[in-house]
Image 1 (cartoon, chains in turn orange, brown):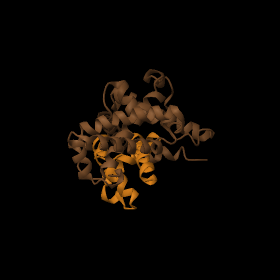
Image 2 (cartoon, chains in turn purple, brown; image 1 turned 90 degrees about the vertical axis):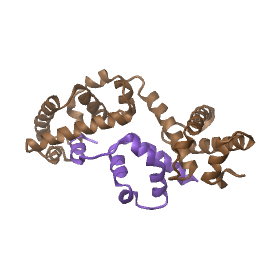
Image 3 (tube, helix red, strand yellow; image 1 turned 135 degrees about the vertical axis):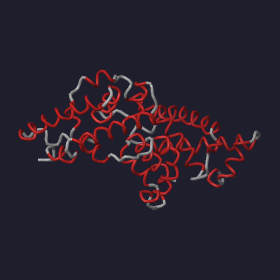
Image 4 (spheres, helix red, strand yellow; image 1 turned 30 degrees about the horizontal axis):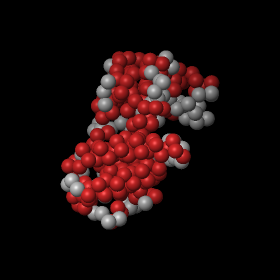
Length: 68
Length: 211
């Protein structure tokens, strides 16, 4: 993501990678069930839009869940 | 008992107490993790052949140890196997990122210009190049005045070169969570500076829109 876009999307309050990791399994199962984690876990969703490392891990986890 | 049939409580009970039940649960969990890694790592490595089998085995073993070490941290917010797979994914991607970026130093990245901080879709348009040059100078000045050297280095590595946070953190002697917070603080400071100077980040982007 280009820097100007990053700045435009920056929020005063954002949670870090550790808090997201704590909830990543729950978030992935919500996505897998077709629920709306963006509204249920908005700060996690917001972080995942900004952090490629965490997003890659979510995507990998979703590939596992999809294959079950 | 088939592995898919265990409830969270049954996994915890079997893994938490010594005995044949634990061995069986460990073997089942290992199989779950190995199957998961094959799906998870598609697009990262070739997920067939002996080389992958050995790699996945290493990741699964490390993840199993972490699962056992952290059993008490499982909060039951998901299926136990999803939680365990999450740990295996973290183990695997951490190592694969390390391998992918192992020959890249932050110093070598910093030698590149700032211009890639912007969307490069309009880089070839002469008018855009002039606007871009002015915007770059402004951004460079703001970064120099608002950010610490560590923040500038981290921001350039992540935003400019796409280096994983984990790898930047490793090189800066910190961890991923602390680096995210450092970068967040940098973004907030820059955004505040933009606001004080009456510049909207969106305005900066407009000069670089696709032609």
